[in-house]
Image 1 (cartoon, rainbow, N blue to C red):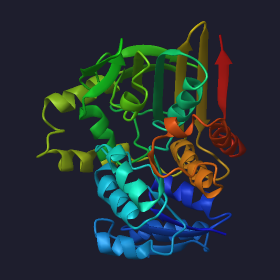
Image 2 (cartoon, rainbow, N blue to C red):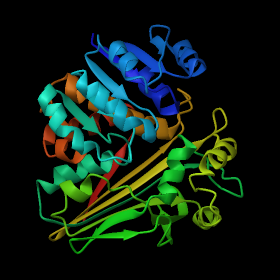
Image 3 (cartoon, helix red, strand yellow):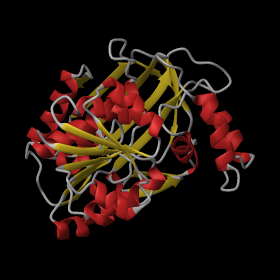
Length: 362
């Protein structure tokens, strides 16, 4: 059994810890001691530790016995923590989705001889693995994906619940959205280009621009057109635009706004929510579409966002542990997905946990 050291005990962190602890020694750290105790109650074999991830020395000391590290902290904490883990010579999977360019740490990872997979969640994550695979198979003309995590029974005025930190959601609503149009990087405001879509298994949702392409803008810039949009119930984007226009997301107000929205957006215990993801890859004479719909799991009492994000990350952990991906450096999923056995491993791992991604080719 391997010693896996996981940092982050939030909703997604809980699902990952329970999953990984079934076949490994799982050591879990977070600053929130109550969250740690709650997870340990699900599996007493999980070893918990209170940790301030901003304390580089404490972090490095805590992970010293680790075979591999799983980093799942809010985005603003991710980059420095990842750098410390790499400096400690540990392989790591990171789903913090830091605003910084984590690929800049690749030279350090090579120097330290470690393997790092970043952005290994539901999205970014699953679309990247699939794009990497198909990019090696055919000449792709365009790639786009639409993703959202939403309550099954929406309540006004927001018609939304946050499956992760509200401050990370707000970041999606403020960071300018980059996309590739005819080989040119175009930047549009977040929440722009709102359009109504009819989604399989869901019905009518609105899609709008967010900055979710991340590494694809550099690793896949040979593809002429790349686009990503976030999905919400109709009307949510206009409400968030109003918040932004009133300055409620400005630096001097964001802490107060986030605190208020945390209460408004908090998922109730065992609240039914779902995650939906549509991916469209257009190549020469061929269109490949993928659809994922996943709901709160009633048996394990695990949210869909925790399942889809968390199990993609734990699959990536096992990808490294089983030596299917052992290159040194920092790699986004699209680079790993080029290797067919890696992509197939991810899909099989998800399928075994009843996270099903359907494929259609036209």
